[in-house]
Amino acid sequence: MKPITTNKHKILNDPIYGFTTIPNELIFDLIEHRYYQRLRRITQLGLTYLVYPGAYHTRFHHALGAMHLMQKAIKTLQSKGQEVSEEEETAVLIAILLHDIGHGPFSHALENSIVNGINHEHISMMIMDRLNVEFDGKLSLAIQIFQNKYPKLFLHQLISSQLDVDRLDYLKRDSFYSGVSEGVINSDRIISMFNVSKGELVVDAKAIYSVEKFIIARRLMYWQVYLHKTVLSAEFSLVEVLKRAKYLVQEGADLFATSALKEFLKNNHNVNDFNSNDSLLDLFCQLDDFDIMTSIKEWTKHEDKVLSLLSEKIIQRKLLKIELQDQPFEEEYIEQIRNKTETFYQLNPSESKHFVFSKKINNKAYNPTKDKINLLYKDGSIVDIAEAADQLNISVLAKTVTKYFLCYPKECVL
Image (cartoon, rainbow, N blue to C red; front, side, top):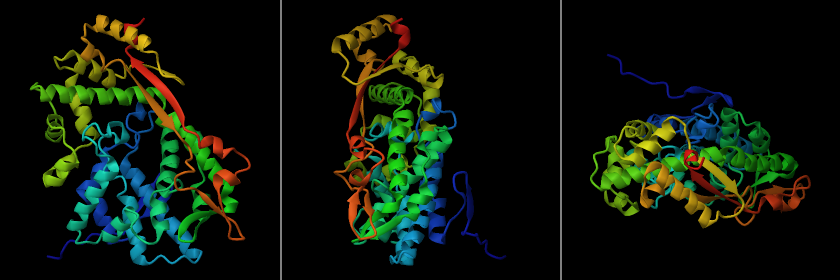
């Protein structure tokens, strides 16, 4: 019998870019790995689909799209005389492919809710280390580049900077699926203008207007999509559901949950636990959106009033009312609403805090104190986009905008 062979040089049809390719067998095998396939079951924009019904795309889509843009970026730099070896190209493609592999269920919505004090970048790094062992060290260079420990700094900047292929893909993709046209950017134009000066990533100056548009698009997408007030209400309610579920489980309550989720509800795992227990990472990599939503559906029938009410609000999209303003809410006002909620639902103060809560959000479209977006002029001079922009005052967009919001059940204050 002939051995079964697999064609690993696949062509994929992406709704944003058309036909894209998987460039080699190693990358194909990484995509086929269970850790990566899990990203099919993690939405890119959390519960944003409750506001924009089309925004149901996944981290799987995004990572493949970012890899496609990275292929174009490397070809652009090579065409301008920048040496990038085949080994380096494969490594940077792997690094961008796996940059989001550590995301938990619902992406950013539940960051630090399932595991204490560990962000998705840290978990991504742990998963890449694990994969490097499984793949006999073939990810070592990718990990170096990902951690910014490789001499060619521009390779890391293509993955993580203020103008990287990660942002170029998610703005265009999130705009497409949400239908919010303000996020549309010309990624082809920007990538074609990528260059390297003194070992760092720059953009040819004639792309200045495309870069300005990119910064504005990012700002608009944050207020209109990522930080949309109804999305905030839904996602912070989801956090409160998980908090309540964890409290009940740790108090000994019988609560339905998938086996992977139950492990993280029972225990307050932190980074030390992951370092001392290899099986924990595997358990985390079994978690996805399905674990959470399946459990929440069951929790709508639970005898605990807080858990069942909050779960019902998410499942039926009867979300908490949200008020948004520029100044912190008066404590007296919050207390009045909390008292009404306690009376309406017959809750005690520790229970009502799951329904009435105030938090703040920040938005900064461009951060000139971080890695700047530098423009390269024909005379070799380098100028920060904030100084060079003549159509828009980018320095204004560099200011942090802070808004405060208050969530509560609207039926309690009618």
